[in-house]
Image (cartoon, rainbow, N blue to C red):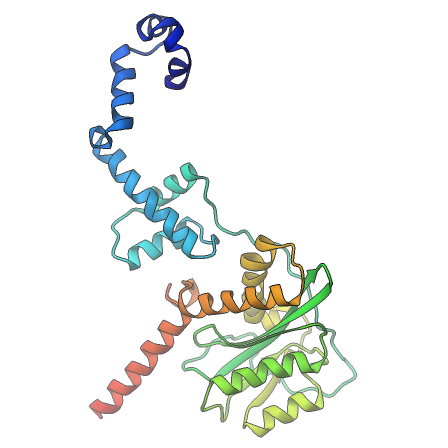
Length: 299
């Protein structure tokens, strides 16, 4: 109604228009006064103005993928006292929403005839320390110049992405390069369990020999479905939802590689993961190492 009065007040006047509408002139004038002087707004409305800016900032700073729950948790981490329902209401008003996952697509091709290691995980994706269990998988991305492939190696303890690689083909070099990055970035891999699906890339001689060189134990899913590598599938699902589907179409491999670099850094150091207590992976590992140091000093 206010907008209607604004559009016709010069021709008819405010009071005559209000006489025909269910709104008092004083209500109209008060609304206009609040537009020019926010201090006249009710306390709740004033707080909404401030919180709306904070909600928008958190959403923008986190790849625009957070829903109300994640935005609310991030505001709480920053010391903000706000109810989740308030965040939901403000996000709806602002037209903000989180990323929604799509369907999962399989890329690796199992080699049933090849010898493969035993399944040491049995769908129990848990670890009590870093470098105890890694999972690996890769996915594809369509670009204007053809398909490219993105491989990940993930530490199960913190869900941290410890290695990744983008390539034009899904040969063994793709997953081996991701593994090499993971080994370069971590120490203390003796006894590590490395779990993957039954893809021929992970069963190749070069890959299994490299695991043996660093004292890692290979583990391969025995049933041949996504549940046998569910944690890796989950992380890849987040990657496809939060980056690939939201920011495409993709021109070439360089664009995918740069976007993956940005996302991995954000994922490891700033993204809140509910499965590890709503903290980023790097923060959980830092807390673990700090606790280990304190225990050693106490002993």
